[in-house]
Amino acid sequence: MITYLPFIFLGLISGSFLNVLIYRLPLKKSFIFSRSHCPNCKSKIPLYRNIPIISYLIQFGKCHNCSNKISLQYPFVESLSAFFWYWGAANLLSYDAVLFILITNILIVISFIDIKTMEINIYLVLLSIIFLSVYGLFVSENTSNMLYGSIVGCGYLGFVFLLTSLIFKKQTMGLGDLQLIIVLGAWIGPGNILVSIFLASLFGVIFLVIANVINKHNKITHLPFAPFLSLSSIITYMMNIDIFNYLIGY
Image (cartoon, rainbow, N blue to C red; front, side):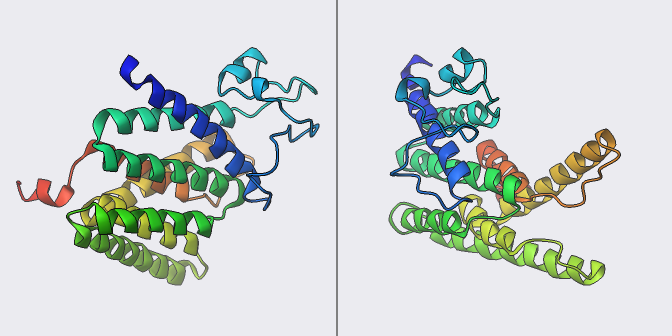
């Protein structure tokens, strides 16, 4: 565990930057030249009060200047990023670890922005495609599997999208979900993307039922799908099971 402390540390720093992206990208604000500040009182946050997780704990989850509550999203995203950095370093070879960290970090940002805005940031999708393309061209020995994964995932989800839209006579899924599935299909392959879509749908249904039971007076009718697709794809990847080979006994 001690060996991987530098990766955990880098993951925490990365998570702090991901929080900046989650907040600023939907607002179209600069995430490079502008200092971090409290969304409530707008006071700038000095570096010594911007230490991942530690600052949150020391300040009891409140802004030092105005005492406004800081969302649990911030330490959660930092912890999640640190875990993915650790897992990638501990379980994968160098290039695979780098790709895993890049894709999971991008998926974190996509998912939280989707939760907040019900939109998937196309630039993050394109960035993921660039990373996967570089990996496919220069590292992967099975580029065709990546291509098949995108085609199978997009084809299957596109069919579901058209079918459900015709049945319910309204758009049941965002086009951003189809764009995201191209990325996820290339990342985890044609067999596993089908498993991932199934799991994402299952997770979504379970969440919807539980949420509506808890909140009876304000029923939820629409859910952001990116968080469930991302979660299921990451789980599928980490389980390291190629479903096609598994089913035929290889």
